[in-house]
Amino acid sequence: MSATVRAGVRRGMPVFPATVALGVSFGVLAVPLMGVVAPVLMSAIVYAGGSQFAAVGVLAGGGGAFAASGAGLLMNGRFLPMGFAFAPAFRGGRAWRAVQGQAVIDAAMVLGRDEDGTYDRKLLFGISATQFVGWVGGTALGVFAGENLPDPDAFGLDAIFPAFYIALLGSELHRVRARVAAVLAVGVVLAGSAFMPPGVPVVAAAAVALIGLIPERGGGEDSGPEKEETA
Amino acid sequence: MTTTLWLTIGLLTLGTFVIKAAGPAALGRRELPAWALPVIALLPAVLLSALIAYDAFGGSEGLHVDAKLAGIGAAVTAVALKAPMTVVMIVAAVATALTRLVVA
Image (tube, rainbow over all chains, first blue to last red; front, side):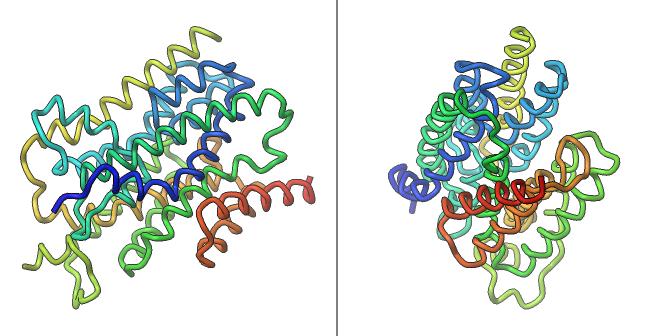
């Protein structure tokens, strides 16, 4: 049974205001450096929040285009394993699948699963469409608000980004193994930050998911994917 | 600045397209091997917590701690209390702003 795009939109709606808020925080932070048009366009065509914050951060620090886009792309490195996770959900030839893969976003990683634990392309498209409107619209709002806002940090706007991900993460930590994996990933990032170039620790932490290869004993509480392996 | 800005946006757009395209294009019509499924089930928890930790403790500026950590603590508490997502974010911003006001 396949879900519908409409079901994806419904799933995306609770996250919509949060994505708008995230977009506003990006617009506010970007407008002093980039002006009014560039941040909105960037949100529409890059459509990957973490990398946009990272790139603007480098530009604000006086970095060049290669350093800034490089920092952003390292933040986006996580979409590589995510792309493989979503890949079986797509239809058609390779080129068309590559285009469908553009819809993959963090929120869909949590919200885009069917009852059996596999990712669903129609859910993904519905979720991604709502978040696109929220992200680009939020950026536009932020750009206009930010022109009259002297110091965004005074309003704690920089905490909106991690709070967005903490709220998404909340629903992922029901399984003990997921909690262990989360703690290990934080450890890799903290240890890695000491010697790795910016952005790399997040990509390196993805390797922690490989603990999924360790056979799980008992496993009565597990959902979907785990069962198929033991069957 | 203008050239740097648009070059950044262009490179980031192209690179992001390629990264997101790679998995679906490489796999094509094939299914994922069974061993990959439990690994993928852990990806959201791993990637989201990595992003949070990276942003919380300094990110691109190297390890350091600032008022944002108070906001992150507040967000974790709000999630534990099952607050709606938007509330979690507002609580985080307010806690960070107040901490900055007191400390600075």
